[in-house]
Length: 304
Image (cartoon, rainbow, N blue to C red; front, top):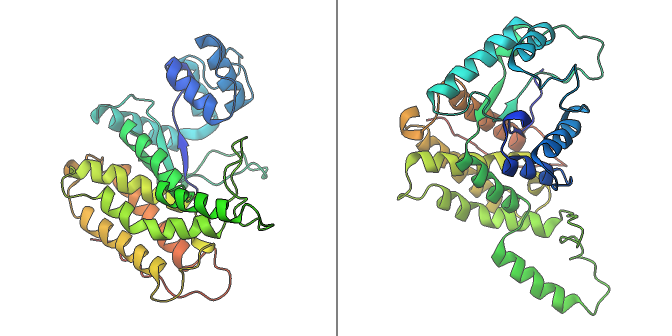
């Protein structure tokens, strides 16, 4: 059984710029002040529980990295990683370029099995290679998946003002001053009501196919990862807006994936299989997982 999560991995702290280090620290709510070496050390401690200069650190020089990875991860993982580096180089990316994880190895943290991954396990890994454009698209899409839509935010503000003199706490789920956010049905409705517009925006006819891929892949990524909208909205019944919007998302992918990898600006080794796995996961979410009570079917025919 593969671990099906969606996560971002941005690369090796030792190869990051100051701006990248600060962004990674800020994303984790950590202090972003200090010199570059201080930032590296802080991020390494957050990620690995070690300082960057620890002798057993996984982020040492490249030769010790290779030796440790060979010992700890085994030959099949090394072959996979070497292949990723070659593909990144061909695509004009840094060899340690980050990636979106769609399906990764099982989490063995609660198991005594410390053997290297098998060839079959490694072959089932699915990722989408990371780019600056996809990063920016994801940041926008993630806000949308939380129900953070400017027009709907203004509407909710009006509702809060109307309800301000009552004991109704319906709107108490908005962002607090400390950044805490609690999702509710209003947010779910916002996502569902905005999906069609987001799909159209991502796949606008004037956009290059590669840009359409970046935007639509990260929209789908965010909707699957931050999927609270799916179970907490009032538009879910048969024939209603959620069902229609999911059909339109599938149709958009069916049309877009009919283009070649070159037209989409993607690699066939990792990113094409990665997006296909993500769409399989999305279909599974709609029709097999996270259901509370009776639900209609949500046809998701995305294959070209």
